[in-house]
Amino acid sequence: MSKKKTRRDFIVIASYSMGAVGAGAAIWPIINQMNPAADTLAMASTEVNIGALEIGQALTVKWRGKPVFIRRRTVDEITETRNVAIDSLRDPQSDQDRVQKDEWLIVMGVCTHLGCVPLGQKIGDGKGEYGGWFCPCHGSHYDASGRIRKGPAPQNLEIPPYSFISDSVLKIG
Amino acid sequence: MKSSIPKSQFKNPVINWIDTRLPIFTAANEAVGTEHPTPKNLNYWWNFGSLAGVTLVIMIITGIALAMNYTAHVDHAFDSVERIMRDVNGGWLIRYIHMNGASFFFIVVYIHMARSLYYGSYKAPRELLWILGVVIYLLMMATAFLGYTLPWGQMSFWGATVITNFFSVIPFVGEPIVNWLLGGYTVDNPTLNRFYALHYLLPFVIAGVILLHIVALHRFGSNNPLGIDINNDKDMIPFHPYYTIKDFFGLAVFLAVFCIFVFFLPNFLGHPDNYVPADSMSTPAHIVPEWYLSPFYAILRAVPDKLLGVLAMFGAIGILFILPWLDRSPVRSAHFRPLYKIFYIIFIINMLGLGYLGVQNPEGIYIILGRVCTAWYFIHFLIVMPLLNIIETPMALPKSLSDPIFSSGSSGMAPAASRSKK
Image (tube, rainbow over the protein chains, first blue to last red):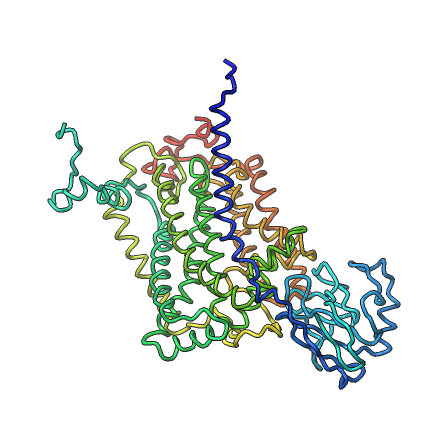
């Protein structure tokens, strides 16, 4: 009963395989056209004048279509974020690792839960229980270092690539 | 040889000529005509399948009309919808029908599903019929979500952001998948364009699955309020005229209620924030889904962990696929299941509770209630349903639809357990 492998079997398998490869090759462009296009990928950088920002003030700028939060933090905020036991954090990271200059916190204004923009930039906004930001969608609280402290978000607010061109000009991207 | 070709039975010569070559009239007659035998005791809960079909037709017709006036571009979408409302002839009416039609489609389908749950219509041999129904329900939710994005209001934008971000929980490839779905790093023009294309496509996919749903239905015919198998012709009546007339009456009542909403309460079921143009820099303070997705939103929020929350939400829908195997009781209708009847009512109340909680702020007591209701949703399906068959003693089932159900003696009755063994 054992069927002998014949050359015909090889031809059949080879034909099906080529057919599958061909079908995949034909489908791929249809799938790939949905990926970000070249103009979307062209990652523009944004230069921001931050010279006018006083201590305790915040500024929101747009980069890659998303808001970036810039906050010039008070001394209290900085000491408070640095006194937190890092092990107790959900996404353990020290404040020093999240800033280039102590005063300036630059984070993406996009909640790491499901992408809402947290509140806390404007005067009068609730800043959540940890003095940073509060996401109204599903109740995530971030501290003044942009670290997740309470709520469903899994990670700290993302830090975009940035550099200080001068004391008053910040380049994001 | 020519004599062996089966001739159509229709008397009208034109219909006969066509039907002999393309038996569409025979097919229609067997689907909703005199040749489709139907249990004689179907109540008004059995109206909602055909109502759902009619609603889909209304949605497709008004949707095509809207598409003729809509512009799928982030700079023009919101304005083109406002133009439909203000300038296009009868545009306000067409849009309000389409907008409220979505809600009413879900109302009808939820009642249709609740009917199936109560009378055990999902049980053998109708498991695939039920599963196809769940597929239709999933496609409906996808279509409704895509359509809600098109007016490009604040709720459109942020709803699209939140829902596409569900996929970011997938390990390693989550972020690339989200970017692939969006066509960029945020919800933007490429997103709007593809959502529009898919929103136009999916209703026709739904129509295709409905065809399969109907084919599966006609394999064993409709279930009935007593949930028993029918073995004699006396219990059957032809679909036409008995149920066509009943469906038409139900349709008239449905359309009357529908018109009250379209003409007098057109925005009652919507959210005012969606009349604010989309702003990618600010999320509305109270972001809520449309009411028909609210129970699942409540489940998502009840779990304080991103991955588990999304899994619970998809699991809540996925669990419906295996329902025919979770419920082990051989008795279909809750009519004869005293305990299931109680748990069914609790389940419906719990579901309404989840719907209510999904539109509340995630604070204080609402978080706790959300967790209790979410837990109960899964307990109902995973623990109550399988256990009921063990602890519940069903009432005696009648042998046929003609048997008196509450007779003084037990003549003509057979214990449920012995029936199930056949």
